[in-house]
Amino acid sequence: MSHTVRDKTKLLARVRRLQGQTAALEKQLESDGDCSAILQQIAAIRGAVNGLMLAVMEGHLTDHVVKEPELEQRQHDLDAVLQVLRSYLK
Image 1 (cartoon, one colour):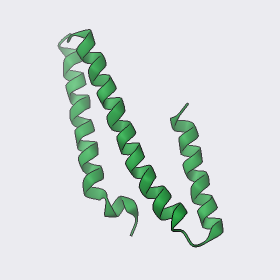
Image 2 (cartoon, helix red, strand yellow; image 1 turned 30 degrees about the vertical axis):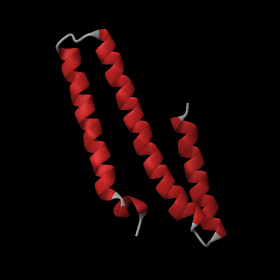
Image 3 (spheres, rainbow, N blue to C red; image 1 turned 180 degrees about the vertical axis):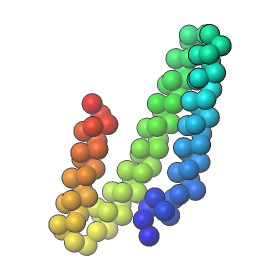
């Protein structure tokens, strides 16, 4: 069973919190909210996205790299993670 299937409930909860945070940001912007509060909300969203990325990345590395018995598949999965990290950290 894939880590995203196994952890689906937790991951979906994170995504739903993110949706709530982005909806709050949209409301702040629409109502000409305080700039400091808007910046704080953006920082909170970024933190939530980073937390989601970390949770999925941990599961991927554990299930598809550490526990993968086939060397070739392990390397393929590691390469995929490295590619995502390069893109994410740009």
